[in-house]
Image 1 (cartoon, rainbow, N blue to C red):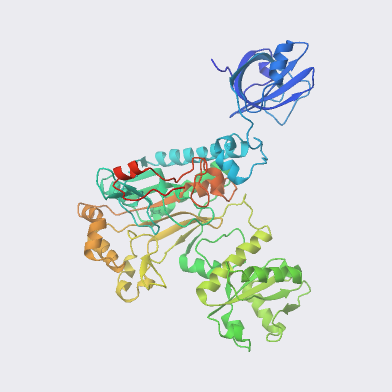
Image 2 (image 1 turned 180 degrees about the vertical axis):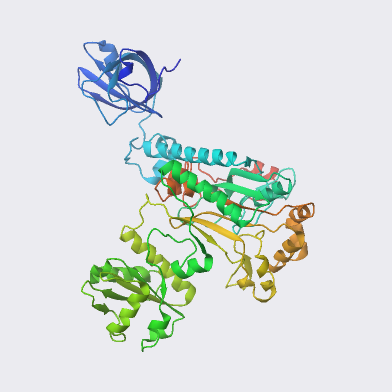
Length: 585
Ligand code: ASP
């Protein structure tokens, strides 16, 4: 038997017991006549003690020689500590060692296995198994498990069945490139890894499963923006005989449950706003509503003067930044530089200070009287003490610039408290999105999303105006879930493919199986998928998903621990009928 207890178990009540523990040598202190060792496992730390009065010189010598991270088994007796450590659950006791067995030696780890480590990101990823021994990473994985279990239990209690769908499939277009897998048995043919189980979960509805969920890996070969992973996990869900309202209520219920169980917060009746309203008020479709600073269109108030910058702009937009009238000239210049960075792309920024004494002073005083500025203040909701920031230009880009500025200011002002949770639904997304370069329309969500019945007639005349029964669940400025009511009949699905520029043959070749299924009694259905990695990160009060993934990939999509992707040898290539020369490293 390796152990009678784990390293987080023993308490004062266990005093006098003879115990066996196994774990890793976390650290030791040597006072000559006394040696202490912190023995660590997943459950905690137990202090081991040896002293010259009660232990043999050989045993003390053996203990003294144990290197960090050596795996040992010890036998001993639980004794009360003189100096108790209240910070440690086992801090009232220590184990007086009777014998030590080394189960495995350890090389000196390349970074310290402590909460605050000296290891850089890349090093920690290369030795991720050592990183996982550290509390912050370990606790994140435990937290993830807890969230997954809450989700599974909740959905199962609601009658959802977890059904596995295949990973070796044919492409499902969800806006990204597919990862593909060559088929050895079918020369020249490839599987694609699913970008999501979308078509399969719909087929499960046709199969009568009624309520499906799956905690499932999805694969998307995208250029990796910060904090994206080529493989990631979804809580994927689908339901039959439901309306959008049923889906929103069901998954609001799940989210309420998670927030309650994890943080003890009570959230009811998430706000619902339309996509158009989200864009107008926040400049983006995943607004962070933990704070105000809503966007106000100032065209009518700002375009009647001689200020050409505003007069020539399609859109003039302002926000009131709370308490920021005290920003120094240098602060504001810093902000202006910030909005002018290429990533943001604004040409400049106009501002007005609404001083505590009620006076208003702007960077465009030449053109606007205090009376004019008062109107800006009224419109944006600025109070004395606030700073009004104004951007102008083309509608789409100016909106995203202002949205970025709003988020940046909120961060600088400490308004994005990770302990505050502000969920909302964004609904009524457009069905289609125009790619400005090609002039083509793409499905904003995916091609299986149903148009709103009353908007179908616009498909031919004004495709951009067609709205979908599609919705996103947004939490603290992040899209944590998204879904839609689906098309469930062949003619509508064919019509949709036509509008997406598929020929009937292309549509049949790629999605014939789905449209065929729709002809055998497909129930009305819809669903949603949550990004589990991000959900866990936000619930865990962090922003990066990598911290919550056991073995994440880096920003170039590499696993630096196993060194993947990697070249394969000629024999394997031949077997797969891939007539390539392996890339020599
Ligand atoms: N398959 C969709 C996605 O991955 C989710 C859904 O529509 O249910 O975003």
